[in-house]
Length: 259
Image (cartoon, rainbow, N blue to C red):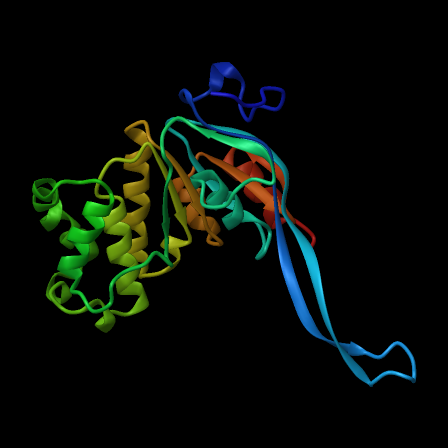
């Protein structure tokens, strides 16, 4: 695995496990077409004239860090700071403009916006989701009851997904995605929905993944979830990595920032 070593998050002796993700001087730019009207430049033109311009948005600006096995890493930052762009770049969904991301295995992204088939029942979606994760039908059979119990949706599992609330749908997505072992799992705001009891179950599930040598990235605006779940945090702001270290240290700096 390649990656920079001049700015490690931890000393080698303190590293919790082998390196599994290396983000090396990562830049991501978006080219956005802006259309609209602006005031005429002089009295000889119309009051408003059409314009079409290409704007370049620098979503990530030279982000570098290394993640290890047995780590759960909270990712914090204000809205539009580049957190989700970073996670999508780690999974390969968003290409790098400059720099690179290296991973020891394929990262799996769990987001509240993950697609479900609303006309199918929760039961059918469990099987489809399991097959999409590469599980065999027999493996899904074996874990089906545990998935349903985890969601707390047993009485609704045979109903079409379109009848579910957003919170119910998110419960099912999380249960499906975490039913099998992941070496690298990215959870993007999925713990922001549901009641506190379900959030506690979800946090416990993330700790189980970490303890079985998995690596978890948790993107959340809920600081308590990150404190309860993560042993490390990184702070992204305006596309730049501002802090990387023990959870409490990074969250203290983030919460004391000037807004």
